[in-house]
Image 1 (cartoon, rainbow, N blue to C red):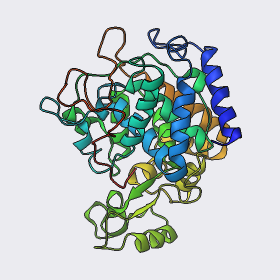
Image 2: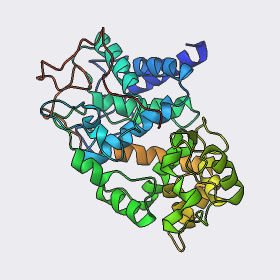
Image 3: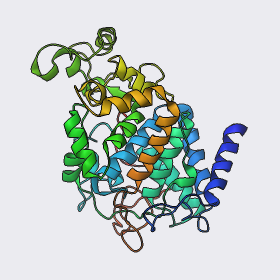
Length: 353
């Protein structure tokens, strides 16, 4: 690790140790691991920084894992559980199947944390910290001193609920609002959290209907900028390889900034679920997009607030759940638990964010 990034990691870890602002859920606290795992933040930072050197997409992937975990049965790492005789994994739900990635990096982080602080830190808390580190490494805001910690890991997964609660790339604004409201997240939270699409990639299959047959019209989406349409058509030719990748943010794809919103203003949102925030006639999201587009400080502040709010959705605390020793398996599933030192995640990783 470069000396400058190492200093950031150590500094941020020190900030965590000093406490930070209180959170609305008294059972979660930024200082939860002060005594039991004081170097936790620095450990997560180091593993994720090293992973980012060879995989510039990993930050967006881990941010997405946290989001997709919290929206199902709360921030409990249920998404990380693999299929077993008793668990139907959420990884094969419609919003996750062949699209989540980064599970191997989560397990590398978990192994490093277990080495330093055995049986102490939950996989759910690792996801929350990794999401923050991912944003910092991409040049975005830090909320290391405010990350609510103390979650425990679930003993169950819920694929049915994942199919019901996770937004789709084709979602309308009305559907997005409904799904966010189900998690007690506001319209402003919706627009702020959507800003995470300022980094990462998406496969053609998630948006090519906008290029050739939008809403069954056999025509392109009229809200799609025509120049952008031509660019995307080259990447995703009709009847071509639908697994081809393109950047979510046309302008600064690996940087966490406000350009996501500037893209929406000119019809350069990649996914339908992005562009509807600005192109839905009369929508109350339009002013929010405009405000975030013109004011990076405002966007960053709202993104941090919304990420903290999301990370407190229905956590397991106290004696609920458990601290998993391996993120992909519950502890009492002795036939499934694997040696962290010798085996990485068995989950299949695919080429999509």
